[in-house]
Length: 427
Image (cartoon, rainbow, N blue to C red):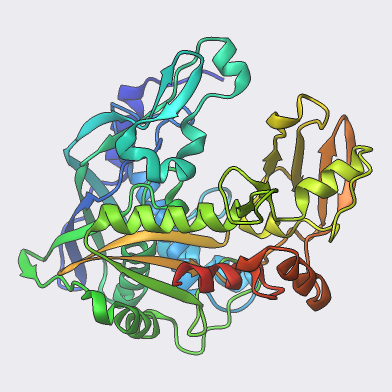
C-alpha cells in the first residue's frame, strides 16, 4: 500500500475537522490547555514525538471516545456502539458523520528534553528526572536496540494547545462529561496512566464568550472530584463489565503536594516502592537493594528447576498491567528472563491511573482504579526458556496472610492487590 506524506496527512486531518457554520442550536467551544508533565511519544513512530503535528485531532477524539464510554456508556455492547457512533461517527458500510467536530492548534511546541542519558555502557536517569524514571522505563532502548546504537528517546515539555469543538446543544452533557474526565484523569500520547502528558485546562471560550474555569483546592479535591463524577455520570448507568468505566463507586485516593512536579514524583515513587518491595537478606529491613518480597521471582526460580521453594506460587502483580518481564541480573544467567502475559493476546492495559492534578493552591496526586476486568479472560501464561506455562494471579485470604507475614508488609493481608496499593498510596 502506498504511504502518504506527513504534509498530506496533516492536510487531510485539517479538512476532516473543519468546523461547521455556527447556528442557534450548535455550541462552539475553544479550550486552551497546557501539558503539566512531559509528552511521551504520540507520533507515527513508537515512543517518539511527531515534530510536524505534536497533538493530532485523531488523538484528542480517541481520548474523548474513551472517556465518553467510561462516563456515559450504558447497556449492551450493541447499544453502546450505536450511541457512540451517533456522537463520534463511524466508518465502514454503515458510515456515519460525527456530530462532534474537533480541531487542534498547537500554540507552543515546547522543547525536547532527555530523561535518560548514556553514561559509558549504562543508561542512567538525569538527576532532575530520577524520581519519575520508574514510570519512564519505556523510553530506554531494549538490549538489542542498545547493541545497535539506539539512544534513549526524548520527551517534550511545556506544550500548549487549543482544542476547538463544535457540537449540537443536545449533546452538551455527553461532550462535557467526556471532557471533564479527560481533563481530570487523562492525558495525550503514551504512558498517560502513569502521569505523562497530564493536561491542565486554562481557558474556555464558548460562542465567543469567556467562561469560568473551575480549579480544585487541595484540601477539598477528593470531595469535589467525587461530586463532579456524580454530576457527569449518566444517570442509572449500567456499563458493560468488560469496558473500562467509572461509576459512583469508583475507588480513588488523593495526596496533596506543593506543586505538580512533587505530586507526580510522590505518585511514581509510591508505585515503585509498592511493586518493588524488598528486604535486606541479612538485616530483614526494607531496602531497595534487597530481596523482592513478592512471590513471582521465587516461583520463576522453582519453575526453572531451582529447588528454592516459593511461599505462594502466584503472580499477583499481573493486575498492574501486562506484559511483565522478569530479569535476574544478579544471578549470573542461572535464572532465565521470563515474561508474564495474557494467553490470548500480547497486552493488558493497567486499570490503575496515577496522575498529578494542578490545583489553585498547589497540586494533588490521584490514584484511581478503573472498573474493568483485572485479569485477562483467557488466563495467564509465563514464557520462560521457550516454554509456555499456565500460571495464576489471584490470591486467597490464606495466601495474602502468608505473604504479609513473610515480609510483604505493603499487602496488609489483602487479596486485592490494587486496593492494597491505594491504602499504601496515602500512608
